[in-house]
Length: 162
View 1 (cartoon, rainbow, N blue to C red):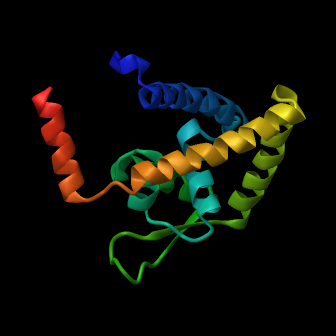
View 2: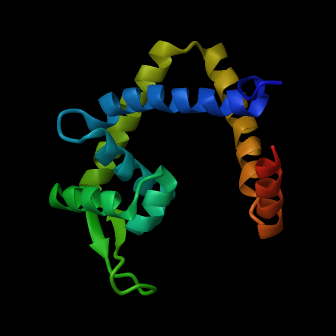
């Protein structure tokens, strides 16, 4: 079997394309004229976490460096959408929390996103998406549970033999 025919590789490639497509939709519904796509995603990540996060935590969640996220967070603080809180666990890595203005923007964005989803997908398609998201969460959980050094070493050894 060629690597591009591997079901997991195919799934990962499709997920990457899906993420790009979803980010296009998010850039319209999240960003609007005031926020860039990444600013909207940082705000969304902090609000959906349900508790304050540091820039490195947001960066790991979004797949961006701490420096990029810190720059975006500073812009969101300047816009009044985020505030910095003292971090008892780290002197220099402030916790980031959404302001009331940021939360209202998020709520308005959620309504706009829901309207977009309802336009794009039928109720039946939305139910399929729900089941697919559950299945993807299971697959992600399996992948994320693979963290031991022995497993990583075994995989690296298998890769170098081929």
